[in-house]
Image 1 (cartoon, one colour):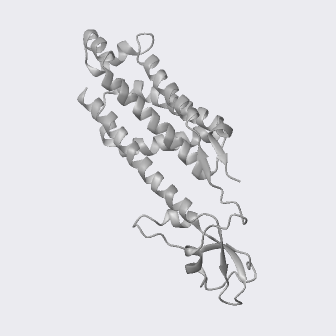
Image 2 (cartoon, rainbow, N blue to C red):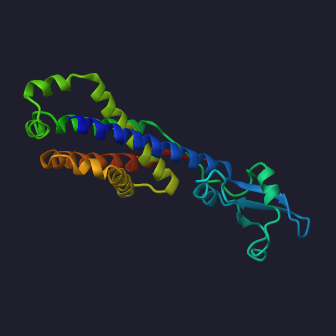
Amino acid sequence: MVLFIWLVLFLLFTSLILLAAGSWHRTIFEKYSGARPVTCPENHQPAVVALDARHAAATVIDGSPALRLCDCTRWPQRAMCNQACLSQALRAEPYRQGKPTGQKQIYHLPILLAAFAAWYIGMIWHSHYLFRSEWTEAVGLTPAQVKEFVWWVSPQLLSAAVCLLFAYGVAWLLALLHRKGVLHGMLISAALTGAVLITTLFGIARLPRGLLAIEAGYILLATLTVGAIVGGLWDRLVLRWH
């Protein structure tokens, strides 16, 4: 039982770390997104450039993103320039009449629905209608202890928090990768689950086989459900800024 609680807490902690890192990368991406007006140092004429926001977000691990241009109105003829206007671009405000920045806004309702669905599936999955007796035997609790455990508030809140954080993680990855649809949602959800499980592999290996089989079935079903809901409701999840 202690091992199971530790695993849930570790999953919650890992989800928080992933979301914090994702939020930081998104902040960097939005900071350097957008086309910006500059004066070209070569011909001293106005030009519009775009910073490589994806490269900046990918190289911000040490706190100092590597900045470079990814487009310019003088390209491709002058694509091999030394990018001497980079300092101007950093000081300039985004040029709203230029190319769209592709920023996206996440809607919360589909994420809440996906998290609730995953949590509710867990309630049914571990109920006496399905695998409660097998789960009780695998964990080593008596039916009376399980009945008392079901009515505790903290495990339910912890489980709901994990489902909510996971759903937000899937939504953020979909927005970051510019993907939509049920299939992409399920694939990204499965990839995120795999990443979390790899980080907890040592603890998972110590679980009883019976408990591992039950939880693996639930995790698979919940993962696909969250991905399908978040990805399937893409048009309600993400709003393009024009």
